[in-house]
Length: 383
Image 1 (cartoon, rainbow, N blue to C red):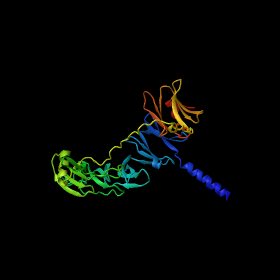
Image 2: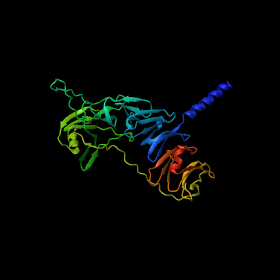
Image 3: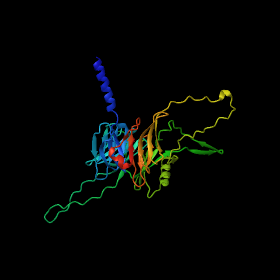
Image 4: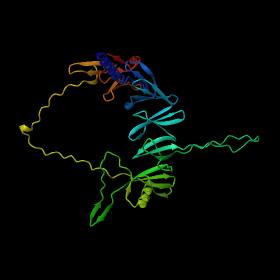
């Protein structure tokens, strides 16, 4: 029984250690690669950009036009290769999704799970607008057929059709991405109801609209979708109110035309925002002994990282372990700037005439995550 308990305990500890991040991005003079926690180079710094997807413990590496983009599991080191990766393209039910292009196909990849959504259109741009998604895309081209023949009766090559102009549509904000309107549009205007004012006996009556949760975006009341000189006015539930034609119209003209259609006061912005809170200072009162502030108990010391310039001009990166003990970790030669990011646990080295370099460090011990072969190149010394 004791052996079984020991085995379970060891297995649990192993899983906890195995669940920790083992791979980190680093940047040498503007080029990005991957290292492990032991300082071994896993991916050479040949990529132009790296991004960390914290919720999935993944790292995106993005290359130049002729380089494949890579998704790396920061725990296992497993790699997935794609032609293009575009991060945070759209939010579906408040979950961010990346867009992946590979072998002529495109799909959305959740940045919180393994969920994928195949895209049937060539969507290039998404905008979250209230409870909907406005997507811009290029319509599919209909294959051309040859209608001409040469003297021998052989069909001539068909004419090369022009690339269709991009257009937009409105999609449901869920995993179906269902199209909610039939017609496409080139531009749109959001409109919001405004309080009506009436003058009577020198008094102004104002209709107040209250919104319970000011942190949430205010849903639009109307949206005007325009394609050329044709304009379709929809309500907030995407019910078509009216279609009208107005050539070379300005936004103000379109707004005024929409006001007449719905017979309501509209604006390009929502007026349903709370008044700023006014903070009034309490009146000062004479202090008595009973009102003297109590001396706060001394807070326990917390270790912290810091950088400082040494007498010889070098920059030091260190960990203040206790009030008396400081652990020196790394020293950068004179002339280099050393920036410490305590939130992301990274160090950035900036030379005078080169691009900056950046790498991570252990948030508890300060051990740096950088392949050892670059220490001398960057002018760094591990202490």
